[in-house]
Amino acid sequence: MIEKKKTSKGIRVTFSLPAEAARKSVSVVGDFNNWDPSVHPMRLYKNKGVWSRSIVLKPGTYQFRYWVDGEHWINDEQADGYTPSPFFSENCLLHVG
Image 1: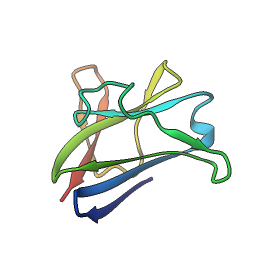
Image 2: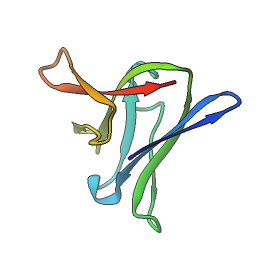
Image 3: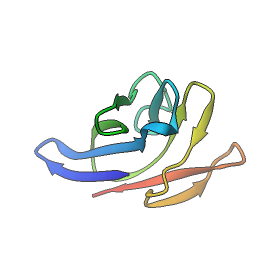
Image 4: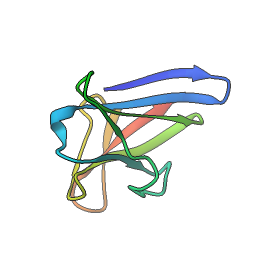
């Protein structure tokens, strides 16, 4: 799930995945953080049953994916779209505006 909310510093985007999507870790990774999994790790909220992370972004279009358990990528079903990646898969698109 992706939620967008305007703030005084930009658009706060909250990324969420169901708790069962990962056993131990999830990071939201994209061109907004140079595809570095250590920059935006998601937190597990056991009481809500979700992994979640909020990031403030400037208007634009971003590519992203989730890096799960340090071993595989998954996409968000609620992404604004998809685009081919150079690694024979697809990246999610996020339109912030």
